[in-house]
Image (cartoon, rainbow, N blue to C red; front, side):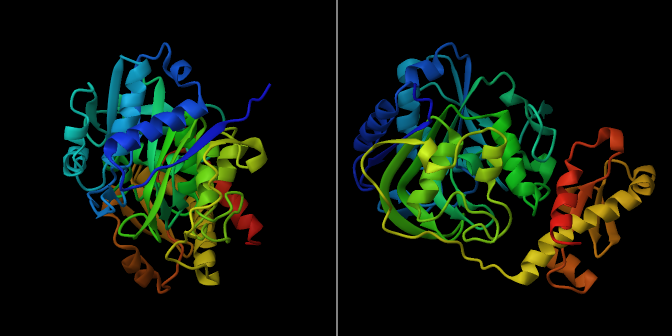
Length: 403
């Protein structure tokens, strides 16, 4: 019996009509198979599109940085073939309400009549969600209470490069579920060396998508926002988030099994091998079944607009080392400022702030230290009994660096 995850790839001209995009998406889903079973018995389905900011730009008539409305509409139509229950869609957009991006892209019109409720993941009440099993970074996350009782997640990602994770596909897309009012804008507490790739694993374990759709009609090269458009004319549909992303990254001309230090993974660890190690799915091509059109590559090698340097690598190691400073000072910090945030660099507590949004610009903190590439750690101050973070991860990185 073949238990390998399935990823379907179909060619679809970005300049084709919306009805053709929907037809090709349906064909990809039918090739993958099992969609009816995915949604059988579900009561609350959440769709996570990429609506992160109002970077509304078009190329060949399609969105460059955001999930295109035609792909979102086609996915919703696909779901509604098999499921008539509660269907919610939304993002924790950075610096603005999701509804602003929703309307700016025309999604309000595209989804009219489908009974989809828009949710704002940055608004309302936030509740704790416990990561199942052994977490990669944090044992629990505060997320919107709108996500309570969700029993199926669909990730609709844009195919694009990402400065910090190498690529934005369906797993990285889930990062937008974490709210800015809790973790800072733009989620500065989580969007940090060491934390970021491991947080992606945790969110993927909390909400593993049953259906993964990659909008590759027009892709984006170089970075996640404001990058260069590339017309790639492809759609991917998969039933496992790691397998889908690994396949997409191969099509982008990169090795999804590669790790930190190998382009495009120049900021920190590649999240896909971490996710595989936590049982979220395979990265190796031999463990993934590919169906559909024969697409070996997209005719363009995707990269990131950053390079690797020993100085930046040292800064990452410094971040890990600063956790030793925090542990040394923890008792005093807990007595003086429980729940607040310590800013640490060069073996010292530089400041204690009320929220992550009160953190000065990185350049200002580095200037205070006197080193442009100083590793800076921001750590919430909690007692050992209240700690939710895997502090051993930091020590492991520092030790491997011989520090």
